[in-house]
Image (cartoon, rainbow, N blue to C red; front, side):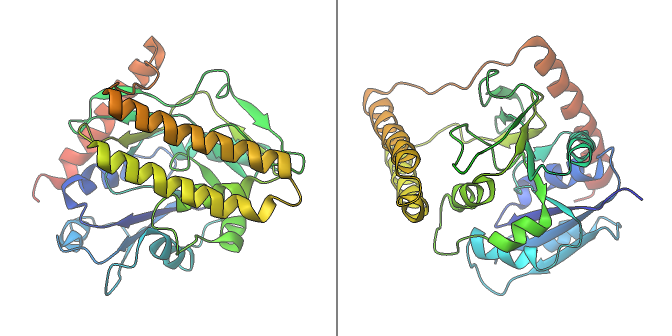
Length: 295
C-alpha cells in the first residue's frame, strides 16, 4: 500500500480562497492522503465550506481562539498519521501532481529528509506572476549537508518531509513570523534533501504592500534568523555569521527597494513552466467548480 501523506492546512479567515486550496487537494493524482484542517480562531465560518466535501480523508479541527501559525501547526502535528507531511496555506494551491512526484523521490532514496521545489507566484486572480529560486539551485539534485546548514533557499510551502523528523522539531510558537525558517534550519542542518526543477506549489502574493509593512516583515524575519542561528554560533561560527550577513543584506535591500520605489520581480517562467502552470490551474479550476459552486 502506498504511504499516507498528511497535508496540514492551518487557516485564519481564509474562506475566500479556501475553495481553491481544497480543490487542489481533491485533484491530486496521488490518492493516499489525509488533510488536517486547523481553524485558528477564524470569524468567517470555514466549517460551512468544509462540510460541503463528503470525503473521509479530510478532518476539521477548530481552535477556541487565535493562537498563531506556529501553535496551530504544532496542534496539527499531534493529529497527523502519515509517514510524510506537507503544508498548504489556505490561500495557496497545489499542482495535481505534487504529492505523487515528491513521494516517488522520497521513496527512491530513504535517506532524504525532505523534497522541495520552486514556488509559482500567482496573483489574486490566479494568473502567473513568476517563479522562485534559480535554475542553478533547483535542478533535480540531492544536496547533502556535512555538519553545516545550507545556504540555498529552500521554499517551505512546497516541501514534502518525513513526519517523524518534523514532530521531533516542531514549530517555535514564540515566533509570529518566519517560524518556517526556524523549522527548516533545524530540520536540514547536516541532512540530505532534494531540490526538484519543476514547480509544484502556487503561492498567492499580495499585489500591494506598503513600505511600512514590508519593513516590519523584514525586521521580524531578521529577529527570527538571529534567534535561530544563535545556538549554532559556537559550533559553526563561520556558517552562522555568513547566514546572518545574508539576512542583514535582505533587510537592506528591502529598505532600499521601498525607499526608491524599485519593484521586486521573481524569475520569469519559461515555456514549459507556463504550460505546466496552465494545465494545473485548469484541472484545479474544474475541481473547484465541481465541488464549490453551491457555496
